[in-house]
Amino acid sequence: MASGATYTPIATTTLGSAANSVTFSSIPSTYQDLVLVINYGQTSGANGFSVQFNGDTGTNYSGTTINGNGSSASSSRYTSANCVDIAENLGSTTLGASTIIAHFMNYANTSTYKTVLSRGGNAATVTQALVGLWRNTSAINQMIISLGGAFTSTPTALAGSTFTLYGIASA
Image 1 (spheres, rainbow, N blue to C red):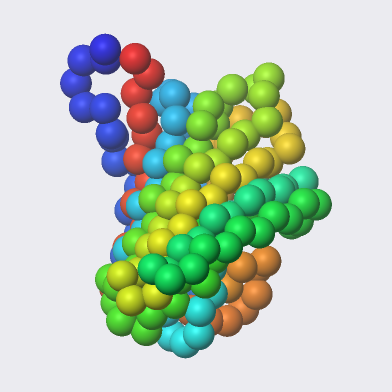
Image 2: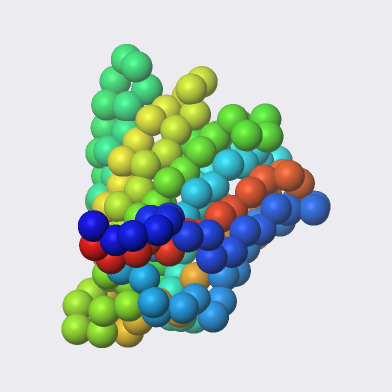
């Protein structure tokens, strides 16, 4: 097992005003995996978060989502998308009511596609798990996180929402 801290904060953004996207750039390639933690509220509606890597806006992303709300469950799948979903339709106009934790596996490996495992929830509406794939072997050095799914302009995350990116040391 690695000595020292396992989760190392790389960057944190706390929104000073409402915004619909956050960018992390110059991500170092010195870790095994990355973890993104988002605590937020949004201006309206029930929308998800999506991510694009290294400026790739092509149709190189796919994924599967499983949702549960306490009385029913559902799933969905998408292919050939321009982003990967890390949360879908969590909803809540209350700051801090929704949380997302996304794991980016082997993000610096240049011989494999990149896998994203995420889970999100809002106690009032839904709990979900998602798996996504970026069909590219480049190391991830930038990510743009967008609220609204598929990179739409609305809604926005509320001021005070936090986005923290951690590096995970290898064992």
